[in-house]
Image (cartoon, rainbow, N blue to C red; front, side, top):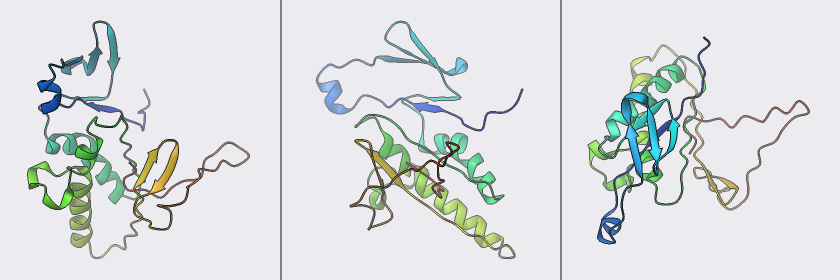
Length: 175
């Protein structure tokens, strides 16, 4: 069977303090060995990777991102796409909350990937590397490159050619 180049992971965050205070209950159950989540009583979804409320930033990085980084250093493109509603934990997983003040073990996948990528580059001085990075936010159906000050105030567009192929956005991590 041919390997599918897209992998999907789900990470279920623990209840927030305010949710516990208001007596909210978890509505997602994990079945880790089956790589499934159950929402409510009978809505079952299967993923390539499933991470529960006690999963660590290192675990998510090692399983989902590190293999992409290896491929990236071999010349392949890599994209990470974080999706979820507001408050679902995307910012924490991607960056580790407020990046400047976060503890080392709480760092998200972006600071970990950047550190590892540039460490790899420094160890392979005989190879020329070209790193292009975009950090795309999709919010209310609008795209913004958070690393490009000029596009932070104007819309980005994804274009298709006559064959339906979309233009590629250079990306190390797209979120």
